[in-house]
Length: 327
Image (cartoon, rainbow, N blue to C red; front, side):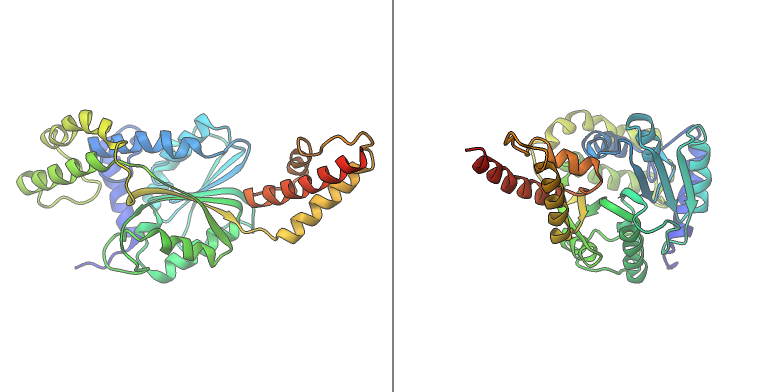
């Protein structure tokens, strides 16, 4: 058995993507289930992230589909991409050549060529699950956290494995595994959401086993499938897709949002300073709560939800004092 090497593996997948022709942004197998899953992922996961006027980093950009979607629909300031595969880098470079605000980089999987906290928001999409070497996983997470100022969103397949390392091309780890390795780097989990494709996935897994047994015993990820396979997988999805949202699940593709942990005393001090300055010109006892958080945000003193909470709490205290003075 050949030892799994991420760069070699995904470059071979990239070669299969090139054979499809056109601008194909499905990074692995291209079949009706994964096309349906991608459309749902774009609507429910990617389009609910705030990219507006921010510096964005995607680690593991593949053929470039996510970067293209963000650039087209969300008006970021700069989009940075880093990928371990030279072949994926070449494909994405061609696919994204019309976007002047996208910058791509080929990496070694353990180091990112970006300054500390130079990125507003970072994201990965089914990337960390394919890192089965513990040292590489921990190092890459450390690098993502180092380069990110505020928020990291990872969208990875969740399962029951508690292992950081393993054999093969992927590990479906638990949420707690990701929660812990990001916490070690100063980021805390704020949001967890599953995509919910349970019924469609059940049908896909069954039909895929049947197809491979009868028509494609030597299939590798990224290989093209025939018309029979597409019909076998795709026809029932027209029905199962409407059933997926009826069943809440706790595995498969999940969106996990992490915020940088806040020095609450430092932010509270900033809130108090702004409050004091505002109070010197506020002689009417006007409540600060509608104004102060926005003033702190515009001044660059609020970067995460936790910081905003501190500002709002400090504001409430000042409001109380002003109301007392106004009596």
